[in-house]
Length: 253
Ligand code: KIV
Image (cartoon, rainbow, N blue to C red; front, side, top):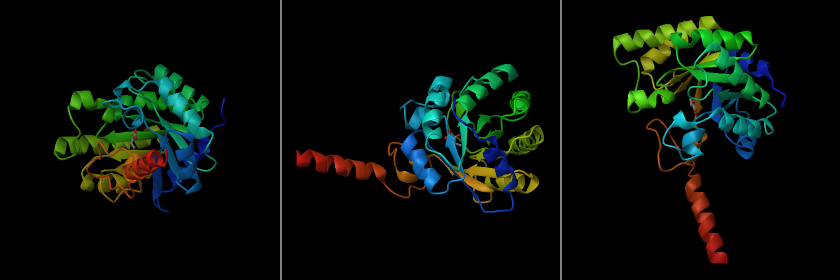
């Protein structure tokens, strides 16, 4: 069993008026170590693992075994950041199942867990919090619903959807989440949620007015050149660097 540090996640809850929260995904030891050494506040073992590491079409085939395997690799690398792991698809159908799945991530070294959804998963969040495990919420576009949604889309464009996401954000805060990820929502809504909540918001594809930002590591390094989301801005091109090293190696043989 790995040591976990729940207070590193709950401490994010008091970061509202301070520096923006920096968050990135990692799935392995070397990446997590580089992020930790560079002062990233929150390292997420996201279920994006399925796509950017395992080559699956979407996140719905990710299992709890995959998540615990990669969480444990990241744990060994991290000394400062909060390490949060995603509850994968269909692993939190009931409050009881949510606690069992969250516990297995904590045993693998997670300091807290993140799960997708709004008011419909409040019983699960309450149960996980009751087990002493910090929770990060995730609303807006929900990648685990891709099969129902059909494709990736911006959320909150119409007034019904806007109000539902706003009220979900408030329900999550009331249920005791430490922070909430806002994925692909219109920037006006992200701003309204950010000013309405006392907990921090962490945006991805939701404009610049959140209390922090999160990205899939491959989207900032150019490490998955076959698909780059519209909001991603690669800051280097690691795939080209690796190709060039591979060519040099071949020529050197
Ligand atoms: O799985 C993931 O990578 C996420 C994003 C919000 C970064 O949930």
